Amino acid sequence: MIVIRNVLRWVPVMLLAMPKRHLTQAELWTDDAVAKVARVAVRLGAEHCPEGFRLVANFGHHAMQSQNHGHLHILGGTYLGDYA
Image (cartoon, rainbow, N blue to C red; front, top):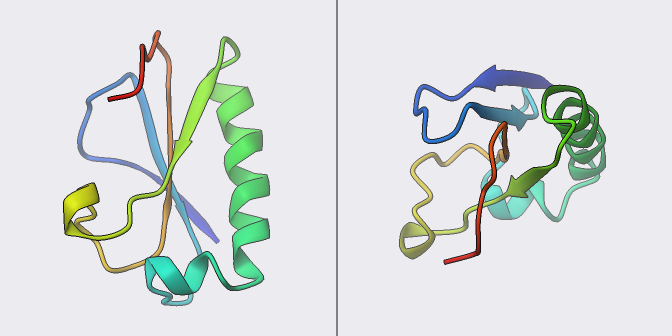
């Protein structure tokens, strides 16, 4: 398990949580590793964004997935507004 800051800075807090073992996005979400990634993501979201945060996973090109390694975005630090 590893968590990194995303180089994109669309919002003040933009972290990526992922397993060290390579899994595609679909494999991550059908593997037991997703539970560990989710627990860490919720803990860090609450710690870094006490007013609220969003967890996001993109699947495929139309969803703007740019990395083949499975990961979960932790977004917050500001009001995130409505969904697109």
